[in-house]
Image (cartoon, rainbow, N blue to C red):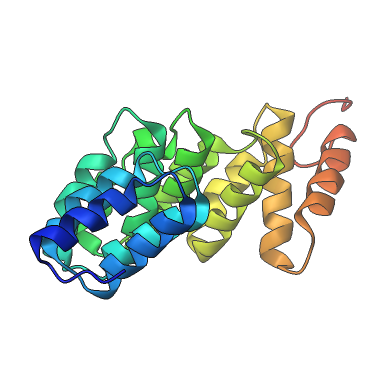
Length: 225
C-alpha cells in the first residue's frame, strides 16, 4: 500500500489501520511511517490505545517516531493521562523512543506507581531514558517503593531500571535492604546482585536473596537476640 497524502489514499490507509487482519494493519503502519504526514499522527496515537498485536503496536510507535516531534509530543503527553491502561503504556513506550526531554515532567509518581503492571513497567523504562541530570536519585527513591511488587517479570523490569540508574540509586537500594517487608528486602538484594554481576540470572538471584532474607540477612532482625 502506498500513502500519497491524497484523499482517497488517506481514507484507505485509515481503514487499513482498523482492518481485522493484523498483517494489513502492520502494512498500513509501515506505509504511513515510510511517508510521514501530520494528518496521520492522531489516528496512529488512537490506534495505539486499542491495537491488540504487539508487532503492530511496535510498528505504530515506529511510524510516530518518523513524524516531527512538534506534532506527536502533545498527543502522547495527553495519552499518558488516559483512563485506558494500554493508551498510557503505549504512549510511554513511544515517548521513550522519541526521547524528547520535554516529556520528563509527564513521568509522574502516579505513572511510576500505576496499578497496572504493564503501565508501571513502561513508566520505569521511560523514566530511565528521560531522567535529567540531577534527578536520578529522586527517581530511584520512587522506584524502590515498588520493590517486591508483582511477578518475576515485573520485578526484573524494576531491577533493570534501577541498575540503569547507576550509582545514584545505591542509597535508596541500601535503605530498601533494611525494609520490614521480606519481599522488598529480597528484591533489593537481587537487584544488587544484578548490578554487581549483570550475567547472573535474575530468577537465581531472587531465589538466593529470598534464602538470605529467610535466614535473617540483609537487615533482618528476625532470629536475633
